[in-house]
Image 1: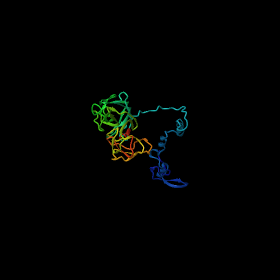
Image 2 (image 1 turned 90 degrees about the vertical axis):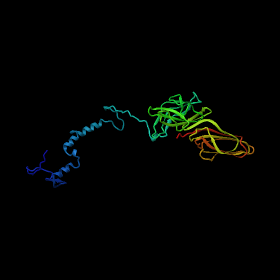
Image 3 (image 1 turned 90 degrees about the horizontal axis):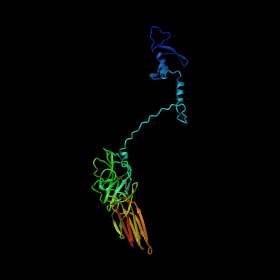
Image 4 (image 1 turned 180 degrees about the horizontal axis):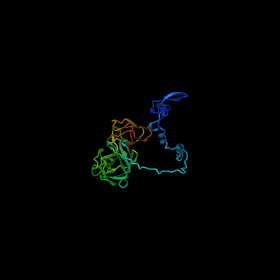
Amino acid sequence: MAITIEGLNPTVLPSRDHVVPAMKDGITVKLTVGQILDLVIDAAPGQLDTLNELAAALGDDPNFAATITAALAAKASLTGIETLTNKTLTAPVVNSPVIATPSGEFIRGRWSGLTWSNNTGDVTNDFTLSAGWAASDGAVPEMMVLASAMTKRTDAAWSAGNNAGCWLDGASMPNGTGHVFIMRNPTTQAVDIGASASLSPTLPSGYTQKFRIHSCVRESGAVVAVEQLGNYYARVPKIERDSTAALAATTITLGVPAGIKVRPRISTQFVLPASSNIAVSIGSGGAGSANTLIQTGFTGTSEADSAMVESQAVITNTSGQIWLEVVIAGGSITVGRLRTLGWEDPRQ
C-alpha cells in the first residue's frame, strides 16, 4: 500500500522525513511521517509491526476470541471434579525408565539384608546368608546383589554356588576367626560368598569386588552359633574366666571375632560370703588398663551376696581382648565368672 501525503507534489516520493500536520493531545502539531509511524508501531516486535503480520498471528480469524474461548471450554479443569463428558482423551505415552545400578560414594559402606544364620543342615560347619546387597569397598563402590539366600560350607575350599565351600585360604576353616565376604565378578556379574582369616583375602579368579559382611568364630571344630539382629550377634554364652582369686589388671581374650574391633557384651557374676568386699573393673583392649568400674560387692558379718552385671562399655582390640581387674579388699569370693554373651560389629 502506497503512502500518500496531502499537498505533496506528485512527482516527489514520500519519505519518513516529510512533515505533515497532525493532532496530538488536542493541539495541531507538525510531525514527520516517521514520527507518526513510530507512534502507531510503538515497541511492537519486528514480526508484529504491521496489520498483516498481526492478522497472520491470529490465524486470519476474525472471530479469534470466540474460537479460543470455545477451545478452552473443551479442556479438563485443573480444579474441582471434571465429568469429562464429550472430552477426547489422547492415550498417554509412557516410556520405560532405565534405572542404572547405583554406584559411587553415596553407597559406600551400605548394605541391606545378607542376614546370618547357622544352617540347621550342618550346624557344625554351614551358614546361610539371606538375599540382599552391599556396596563394594573399592575405589569406586559398586552394588553387589545376592538375589537369593545362599548356604556355604566352612569345611570345604571355596567353589561357586549354593551349598558349596566358602574357605578362601585352603581346604577348610580352622579354629579362630573367619571374615565373611560378599564378592562379585564384574565381568560375569556373578555374586558369591567367601570366607578368610584375612581382611585382605585372595579372591577367586575374576572376583575383584568385595565387602566384609560378617565375621564368625570357630571353636572346638564348630562354627559358634549366633543370632543376628542388625549389627549385634548374640552367641552361645562362653565362660572366659572362672576363678575365686583376685586378678591384677590384665588382658582377657574373649570369644568374639579377632582382626577387627567389636563392642563385646559380657557379664560378670560374683557370689560373696559374709564379710567380703570386692570391686570389678574392665577396660577397652587398647586402653592399657581396667579403667571402668562395673561391679562392686560388700557383705556384712552375717550375710552373703550374689550378683550378675552385664556390660557393653568397652571395645576389644584386634586380638579380641579387653582388660579385666578383680580386687578383693576383704573376705573372699565363692564364685567369680566372666562370660561373653555376644558382640556388636559395625562392619566398617
